[in-house]
Length: 313
Length: 123
Image 1 (tube, each protein chain N blue to C red):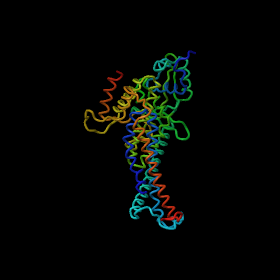
Image 2 (image 1 turned 60 degrees about the horizontal axis):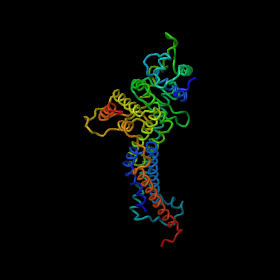
Image 3 (image 1 turned 60 degrees about the vertical axis):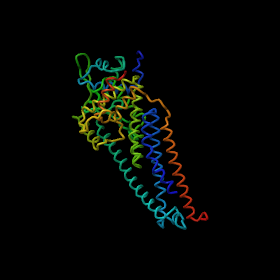
Image 4 (image 1 turned 90 degrees about the vertical axis):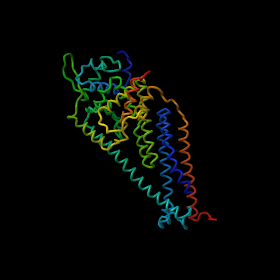
């Protein structure tokens, strides 16, 4: 049963490549939902498995054992191995809980601080313009109360022409309307639960950007225009920003998300609703769910035996 | 009033566009100049209404120009907001990741590739 409970801890390693494929090939709005949901499901599996794995150790403590009416020690396998894994799981649960809480508190505090620093700015139709030559733009989620705002610097507005500005505004509106920050927050939280899931934050963020790009391109009615807006904004931002020294350009080097977004807008709009990677992600989640459920069931039977409910023959 | 495409969109979105155009211009703009700078075709009366509404909200200011008013965006106190915002955003290297930023950092390879795409783009 211990082995079954370890499977959900290993399965997340298979998600990052599948998530990348999905984010690149499946329609971005579908990819965003699918990858985020898969990451959340696997994170849930990790936490559930760890939680169940903590049980044997917890039930070694007499008051807790008495609490669930154990009349004999829980038999879950070779004792030292089970207790060792159990102790390890307890440690992981504690570390994960602390790290995840701290991360979320930091993110919330930062969002609130940004809201606070923008409070003095006038707001027209949800747009806040910050007088700053450094080109930057982002969608600031509104939280429970209040609407989200689009924050754009004058540097960004001046780097683009009128039509490109509309693409930018449509892109940011799409982020707010789609509540993309919730997807990113979910992916971040899942990433705190397992190191492999931390690598899925990037595909989720990419899918969110692509989804907003597609909405903006549809609003503008012109994919080339949308591509140019994204590309020119990125180049303008790169020119103004002091970037740390990097190794010399290697031709054919792996390029980041912005060129991929521009390429997708210019040449190929992924219209696939279903891709092998998407199906594989579903299978992965199902496998994690099945193994953690089976492990938990077996352990539960062990507990019932220890409670004297079944004859342990 | 003629039903032009741009006017079917919500007033809020159009106000946003007017404000963006006003900020993008370095100098105070007349209503006619703003109308020209807008990518969507708008009736003159619509632009006037939008400007009046923005002025009422205190988002933009206006003063008499050569012919009619010229409009300018209201600035906050000496870039205070920009500085505060930077302090919040630049606290750590990967920024706040819940914020969906329009464009993130580019590597030199990204820049080369982007230039190539934009120059040859649309073909």
